[in-house]
Image (tube, rainbow, N blue to C red; front, top):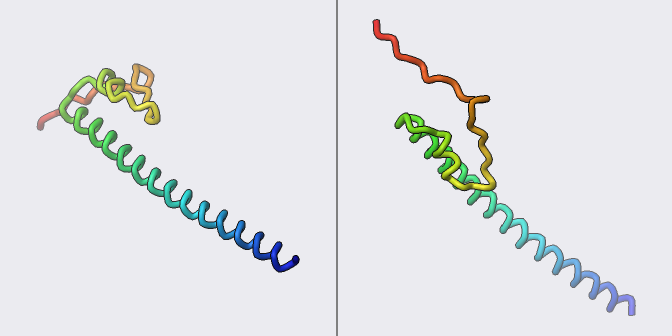
Length: 85
């Protein structure tokens, strides 16, 4: 009877370890995908900034609930005027 219990407990432990491994792999994949998407969003904002587009409208048009950027007069600054010598 002790051997049966030990075998059953070991099988349950092995199953949980396998499920944990699958969940960890899925989590790592999700993080990688999210990182790639965040980099893409940041690059698009930088590109729009270089095009001198209005970022206030552009950032809200991204509609990324997970990527919250507040872009208003509290953190905006005037673009510098280039001085030629």
